[in-house]
Amino acid sequence: MNQVNRPQKALRRSISEHYLDSEGNKQIRGSSTDFETLPIRVSGAILDIPGVEQNKELREWIGYAAVYYDTGEYEKALHYLTQSLMIEPALEPYFFYYMRVCKGVLAVPLRRDEVLYEAKLVRYYALPKWLKWTMLGFEFRLRCKWCGRYTPYIDPNVPTFGFSTSANSCMSCGRMYPMPSWMWDSPDGRAYSYYRMSFSDEKFYKEFERDYDPKPLCQHK
Image 1 (cartoon, one colour):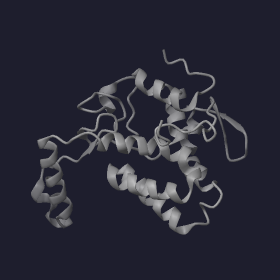
Image 2 (spheres, one colour; image 1 turned 120 degrees about the vertical axis):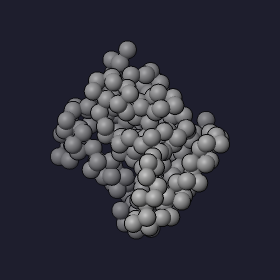
Image 3 (spheres, helix red, strand yellow; image 1 turned 90 degrees about the horizontal axis):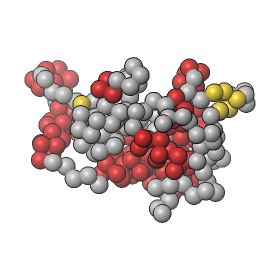
């Protein structure tokens, strides 16, 4: 199996229902504290890899990868992820899922209407701010990380109020939380969603369990 599709056992991070906070204390995943500290822990986990913080160029490339990933520019994100991984292979357990998502989306051929939308998007970005009003009604979309189809943008943090999947789901495949997110698609972000049981479909849980073999398993069934 390709390395970016699933981390080698020797490189896999141990995932459990607890995480260690900044003081080394065990905290419960899926809690409010987990949510509040998640952004810092996601960036901290990468910077804690020996040599990353000291390498300015590598940090810049990782930053570009994060920005492009969050904005759904999968091809550019994949480029910077790949280059960063070539410099520092120890990033693999943190990057393999981002790369899997990027490759999966890019493998989906665009429909004609999506090609036309991309051309319209280029025109929108090219307009100066004071002329964007000429494209009133323009709807910003990103490609769903699950099915690769364009869907109206939804902030990844929009809650689903339990399992009201329509509150944050892809208009094409219907899966929840379709937007790419550097934070939520990180190992700790996925673990939060797993132990909080944020998803209604089994696909998320099965994929996470294949990647991390979490102990204990969450009671999502």
